[in-house]
Image (cartoon, rainbow, N blue to C red; front, side, top):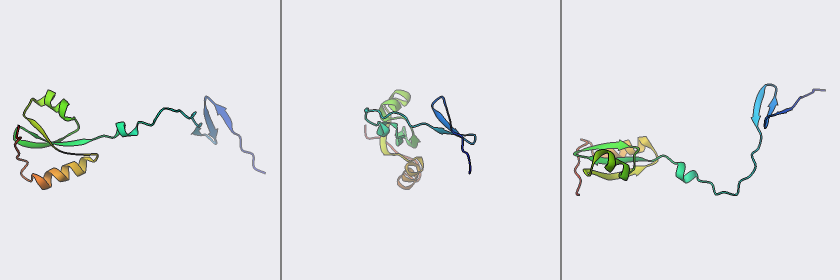
Length: 96
């Protein structure tokens, strides 16, 4: 008969040297995963396109008023592909 020793130590279970996280208490607060999703934005800045992680408000603070949003995605590679397909020369202009 095999004997397995389980030890409860500071909220984690240890089994043969491997720590397993103990289940957390259920919270009644809504999950905010949607807020944690990273977004990638394609901007026209001056006369060139660029993929950035800053939203439009942050970009206007950083780069001035000569910035316009062209596209957004949750994938950096998809944003880059969209920019390369739609602006192959990376030249652009804003209609502001």
